Amino acid sequence: AGEELGLMQKPRLSVKG
Image (cartoon, rainbow, N blue to C red; front, side):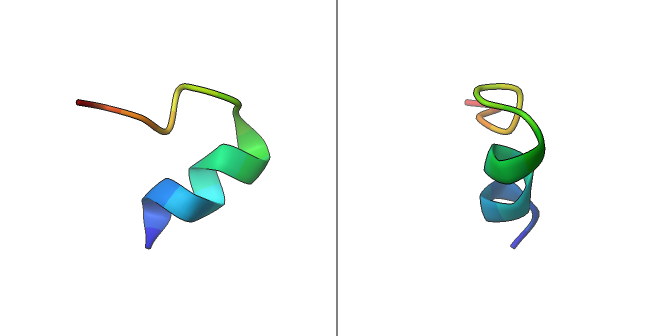
């Protein structure tokens, strides 16, 4: 689940929709 971890590292960069 890289999307959830991405949220902790970056606010919105994790959302690649």
